[in-house]
Image (tube, rainbow, N blue to C red; front, side, top):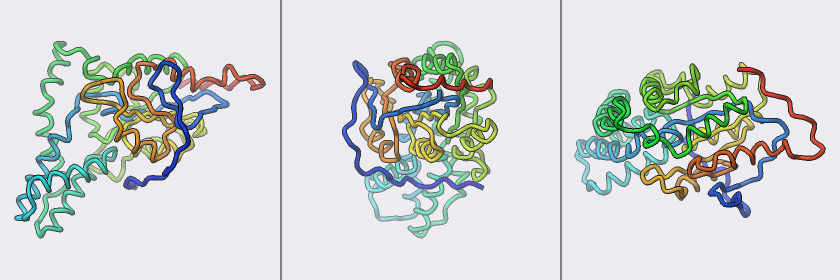
Amino acid sequence: MSHETDYQRRVTEIGPTRFLPTTAIEIVREVTLTEPPCHAVFDFDGTLSLVREGWPEVMVPLMVEVLRATGTSESDGELAKLSLDFIMQLNGKQTIYQMMRLAEEVRQRGGSPEEPLVCKQRYHDRLLVRINHRREGLRTGHVAAEECLVPGSVDLLRELQSRGVALYLASGTDEVYVREECDLLGLTPFFGRHIYGARDDFQNFSKQMVIERILRENNAAGSRLLGFGDGFVEIDNIKTAGGTAIAVASDEKDKSGRPDPWKRDRLIGVGADVVVPDYRDARTLLDYLWAYRRAEGVNPPSACPQA
């Protein structure tokens, strides 16, 4: 069984960072690889997909409603702040963990909470109402996939594949929704059978388990692993495995091309090597990561095995 740990800041101070010329790619610590990456793991929501953008605006009111029912004297504003704080503290983990925390808060106020799985389903039902226009628009073709993707996502995935990198998707959102929304966005061909999401038996799924399986089944060193994510879990897991972590500090609402400051700080805090707001400069980013090809005195790198 696997339990996802809570956010713990591991990096309290960083030296000067730099940006790759004419880009928003921030190098937090220089990446020097002696062999090419062979495997890349992606988070989904906020990292590739924007279908669920605005989800906190659904989760917070639900939690306020549940906490209000305990008879607490706290104002709705106080409950909303409390809820948002712990929702974002747990962001990146499976949704069930946020509902488990809600149950703890209900008990602390003398209430009898619903089962977290029941509350999670209530949240999903409400979220689907909010985002149904996007899903239906994608399904009917009235909404272009690019409108619901982090800018440059498809170019990045294509470029990684062209370099022989095997792609994997590991999301804290329920797998049934992840697979459906991958189809709607046209991303399934990039990942094939390697699409993993949360399950009701949540202790038997985690992003860490996916990463460990990738390395074990491919007899691969962690140094040949890339990770892309806007949540702390995948960044932390990639660094623990010895891989290179690309923090995606995406501006989900406006797609401004500027990094979200809160995400940036949070992901640097768990060891991110590079920060990007999106993938508009995907080729520049990958050229930087593959820079060993231009290094003098380095033996030719061993190619990735065929997936």
